[in-house]
Amino acid sequence: MKKSFVKSATLMMVATLVAKIIGACYRIPLTNLLGAEGMGLYQLVYPVYALILTASSGALPLAISVLVSEKNVGGNLKSGNSVVKSAFSILGLLGIFMAIILILTSGLIGSLQGAKGASFGYIMIAPSIAFVSGIAVLKGYFQGNHLMYPTALSQLSESLVKLIAGLGFVALLKDQPIEYQVAGALFGVSVSEGVTFLILFIMYRRKNPPLKLFVSFKEAREEYKEILKISLPITIGGMIFPLTQFIDSFMVVNILKGSVGSALATANYGLFSGPVSTLINLPVSLSLALGIAVVPHLSQNRTEHNLYAIRLKTSTAIKLAVFVGVPFTTIFIVMPERVLGFLYGSLSESQIALSAELLKITAPTVLLLSITQICTSVLQGLKDTKSPIRNLLIGGVSKIVASIILLYTLGIKGVAYAQLIAFSVTAILNLISVGQLMGKNRDVIKNSGVILLFGGIIGVSLTIAVSYKLNMIFIVLITLLSGIIYLIAVMTSKVFSTEELMSIPFGQHIVRLKKSPK
Image 1 (cartoon, rainbow, N blue to C red):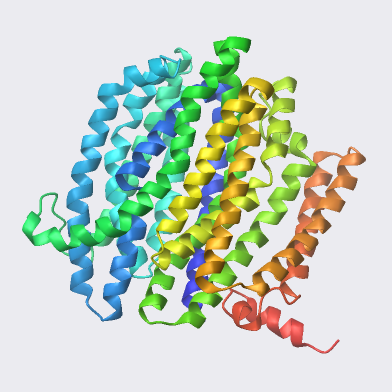
Image 2 (tube, rainbow, N blue to C red):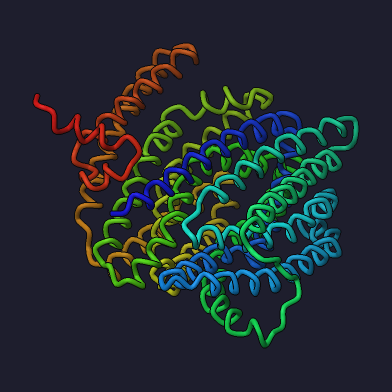
């Protein structure tokens, strides 16, 4: 297996981890500054924003990376640049159009959500849609050329600028009503995307000709067809879960406010979609980075008819996703109160208790979402776009139905259970689809089970630590020590083959350790 795949994946995972740490340095103080109700407003805006981004540019990095990678197999770099120019022209105009639409409908959307104050946030975040469209095209170009560092840099840029600008604007507006503070935080997102687009554009222009916003349709027609052929089904599939979150943003507050009032309903939604979802999304984002890295490689291997390489990369990616997800899942199940209390000190005891219950319920979705994303990326990289759409649609429908039923009986916990049901369904269906396409892989099943078993090391040690009510400093130390033992146990076992280990940074040292005489 080429080292470039896992090196690219490692770079993406490291960049994603650093970006998420920066993101936590943003989200945690932001939650403490805005409170549960302010985060509720913030999170009402985000699902609508995410849905628009998915519809306008969500599939473009993947589609462009696949096309550029395929064209580069024959050394046709000029054709790769032609794809980028065509995509930039259509995406740039679409992004500007969608931003204008969001500004014009901001008041209506806020009213329909039962939170008129959210309208200011929509206006402030709208410019970022245009910037993200351009970012999507440039990321796709770099990924198609197997250059992951620009994408990694863009992640760091987005997180760092959002941290500085977002918290800065909230601090400047601290004496203003909560909706203006939320709008300030959301304007920080627009600033971060603008800066990131500028960075990527400068990197692209260093070795490439100018990009034009307007390109002759006749000149770009073939590229449009190819881009649309790949991106349309992926966009449809990618919109399913953002669409369910979009529906949640309208449904949850409106259903709950009948029993607990509008302010508490917004606050409860803010706890679930803010602190809880932030913690869940941290390890899941690492798996997403794996998916981003694997797609162009799989696409190239498919073009080269290299079935062995496809199976090996798929196996490695799934096992790495499970390896990363298991410790986080264990921690969130064993000590959710300690984690939330440590990170979100401004929340009340009752809010911490509710958030802990929600986190414990949704903890398994770390593994389920990681597996779902890797399998989706594998299927898309092999140009099977129908299976992920079907599987996501079934999962999305199950989430909406379960949410409607459980919200009335369990309150905000119903949304957590509905999410767990939906991602369980989707992960199982995705695994079946990959198995049907490539055959059953007993290595993945067996070794994923071994990883789960080793995860028990962390679970047992933390359960003992929590039962003795140790100080948080000792719990952190025990967690780190358990993590190191878990890492050594997995890497020195037969979970990863020698070929896979040799592709991982420092893997050669692990191989020597395994082969050394005992």
